[in-house]
Length: 268
Image: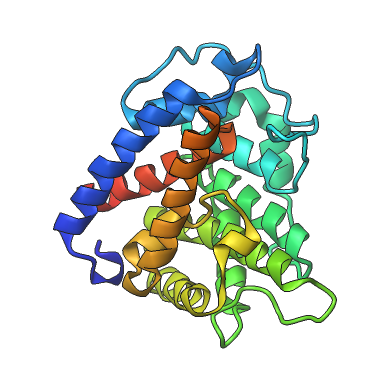
């Protein structure tokens, strides 16, 4: 599979660079007392090639999930579920995944609701291999996301009630999930949709006004016209690391997922 006809030599260079950065960040990540069993960290270590023991992932997906600043965002819980699925431990959280399999197949119009919905679909896509009761749902959900995409390439409909910077953040988070899905299930519809979204964001979004976190990094790396967005996000990560001497778990897992997608692309 060649998304956007990116040269394999560039993919390999990006892969080596991200792997080195991820290993550096894993040495500097800000951890709490339960970090050794944090599935996000375990996933990142697995992708970096420095796996840790994953026998006991004591995370309750029914509880609120906060970032290092104490904020709770709608994406955090399904993002955590996605890392759990990547570790092959969805069986420990059957209640959450069973509820995800019952979500509506029609994309929500509200941005935050759409984010939670689409990341739940991605977690289900990874967890559902070999499970007939889960497997049809994520495809239907992502097809709805792609089919309801705006002509501009935006996933969400225009509105004057949401600040542009918040809308940019929401579009980046949606593109991240959509692109990972396109790597896992590279249909023509999925690839065309994420290409259109990456083009829109390269032309319209200023990521430093939306978020410091490297959402949609893989999409920006492999879509040539968005390359400067990828470079900006990575530079921001390195600046934060140099300034504070540490990095947050969210940044680490987002870079790990970009590396995961590059690895899939290189092996296809």
